[in-house]
Length: 292
Picture 1 (cartoon, rainbow, N blue to C red):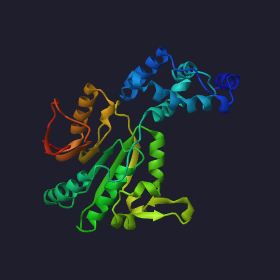
Picture 2: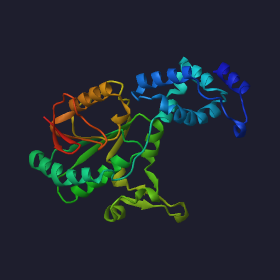
Picture 3: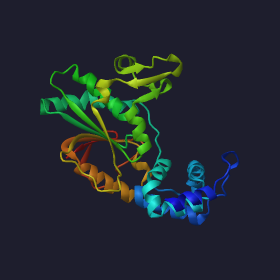
Picture 4: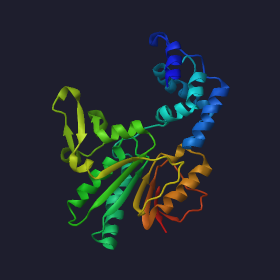
């Protein structure tokens, strides 16, 4: 620890004038291979500029003059312990919004939930938002489920939301968002499930307690083996696997199927496809699948 601090002090630079040299091929290859092995994300050479830009802040924080110094540190035991999660936060993309791909929620309300009620009665419905980013997807599910439960006595549910990014999960747990991010939430649900800041100059909203309490956030790396004591009824994994190569995608979808009850539903993004994969699924609607 003392050695690292001394090196950082020695390398200290003025943040205002900090401009590291471009990342070398060797450093990019080391990083991209490591990131692919550790979190499954494929970084082609075209992503080098993006990676450089995102890592600059970490170099400034740690007082490193070059990407090579940063990578050398990451690959030490100390770096793995202290910096790995920051690196993962940097390379993961947290693009999301409330009620993204709204037809999925229409199908959920119009088809999946009524059928589930007929078959299961009072058993709690389990949902998993896999790759939940900063929480907008699981909170959307929470609003939809809570609204449905008020119309059907005895209906109950629980939502697990996971992501690899610790930073994204911290934001999700706070459940506070800028007002411009809530435009896609229907007015009726906005009035029911959003709390506005008392200081109107801040233009912030917070998800209501009854929605926050039904969502549990956990960190999960898809590259590690995962399973649940009880399989899920519904899995939302949308616009996540597009960052993985085909073999990784198929392996992940097989694991999702293992985590899904027979008759349960898997929702994927409209830019994603299961074509050519041997999976125990049948298509129920575009980008919506039922577990056989």
